[in-house]
Amino acid sequence: MTYERLVTGATAVGIKVNDGVVVAAEKRISYGGYIVSRAGKKVFRIADHMVIAAAGLFADMQSLSRIISAEIMYRELLSSSKMRVRAAAKLLSAILYSYKLMPFLSEIIFAGFDEEGYHLYVLDPVGSIIEDDYAAIGTGASIAIGVIESEYKNTLTIDQATELAIKSVKAAISRDAVSGDGIDIAVVTNNGINERSILL
Image (tube, rainbow, N blue to C red; front, side, top):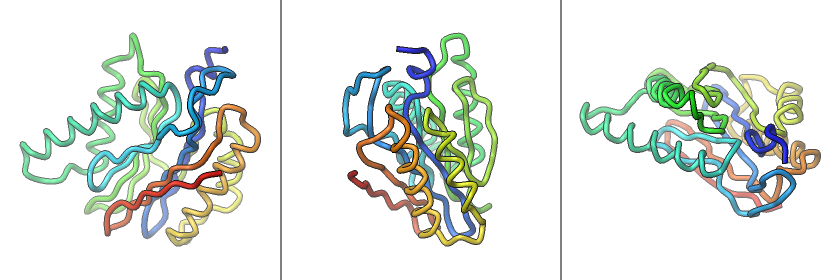
């Protein structure tokens, strides 16, 4: 079992277009070459307008999703208003940085919708944060990002972006031994969040 596979096993992608943002991740939970589960969920609803997709240690993904969900809920209750996506992503970045001496071993794609529009951020285990139009993380990222880059245009519809996300994760699954067994998808639009799963 190599350190790299322990840290970044899995494949997750995110794509932002004019009418929404989509994140997707495969379902296999593995440590090194050992498959622990074929039904893991690596896409998490964080609020009614934000989601994350993650790659890395499964326990760390779950812990981070719970921590940031609770922090956002607390701040929204205090302010009686919805938290902006950028503010929530920067909050997660600060949380990750505060654990830099013993970091969460997960990469994160953070996406959502607010009054400023659609947003997609990528965060590494120690809190570096980058906003982009599309991203891929995990051991299958180099394959998935090639598929996305070959077809991405910001004029894609949200349905086309969803199909591209699925296609890119499927391509990664076909080549990456620690990715597989289905795809979880979350689509964020101004109408809310739509989640679904595909079994492979």
